Length: 483
Image (tube, rainbow, N blue to C red):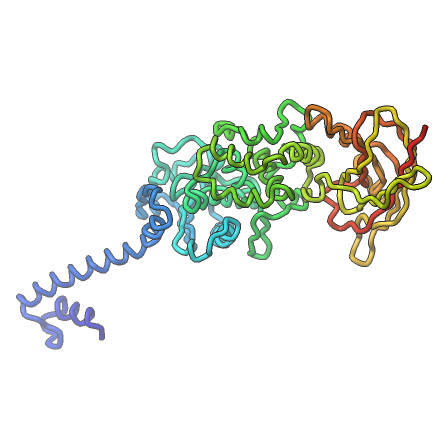
């Protein structure tokens, strides 16, 4: 029998029980001792519950403490609390499996956030957030009764993060609710471990980038390359870019960097901020630079953008061109490295017949030759070779020649068909420079073209950069200038 149990029996047992009975004076002393002991144990238990707070202060002492939660009020209001290692989730959603999945997904995200931002997993052991998932945006009364919605909480449309906490409304579809949870969690992680979010485009773009995920067999993968819209039901960022390209709402790269914080009251800017981060993260000229931006997150907007532009250096004009190619054909699965401009392989200098030969890869989009053309000049183009443009399964590749195959079409032309375009590097704007690539010339096995503008001749096969991953091989193109 434990000491505490013996002490209790001796103090409160029936006086007729001689084994544990104490004299009245002794009973008073023991009652006082038990009271002190219970108070001490309760305090220690409460301290244990709040160890995460002291741990959070060690991570970032500059972030102020959070509001207190009365668990009695929470329970009385009918709010359920489900806890994980890194999250306490309060909700009025009555779907136990779904709530547990959200908690599990959040816990799994922490180690991936650490890896993405270059931190040790151990550094986040005591990091924890509190989330408030509200079933009905129009009726959050239960949360108000439970004291879970502070009076100074702003009116938000979907989610809002502040210090230790974030609030979110239940979204249509399981994917989008989980996406929003990870989006707000990314904000919290950046605040605590990067001491800031950076400018609005970076803050929201990163939250979108790391909110994009795959959930399969209770396993989470952040920063997932979505292959089709069914993977991200109700997310809609790709459609938003498609709808706004070539309109007054289209944003260039510099527009992205200057999205104001207030702009994110409109959901369209989340799409553009995501697209900017997706582009910078994957472009060969910015991939390493983008990975250094977490070091700048504590800076104010102007200094952050200024230092980022300094890091980009002379690459900005090239990036503007590739950005326009990106948003022109944006799709689920778009590969930025395969979609950006690359150099065509020359297969020899000027041939005796006055012809020039190039090797055009089937695995990349537009490839720039070294052949300058003047407006009105005429050329005969011949092509040959066999390459793979897809597959029904690993044993059934789609073999293709420069005329393309009609098993599938892209933008009204046979898949894999040879196209030509002119890149005008002397034009004043990036839009004018790539105009000849956005309106390609149809070639196939052979054709004669009259250069519509002056510039540098480019070639590609007709396929979206979203589907170049399974391509193999190349074709040869022979160029002959006509009098």
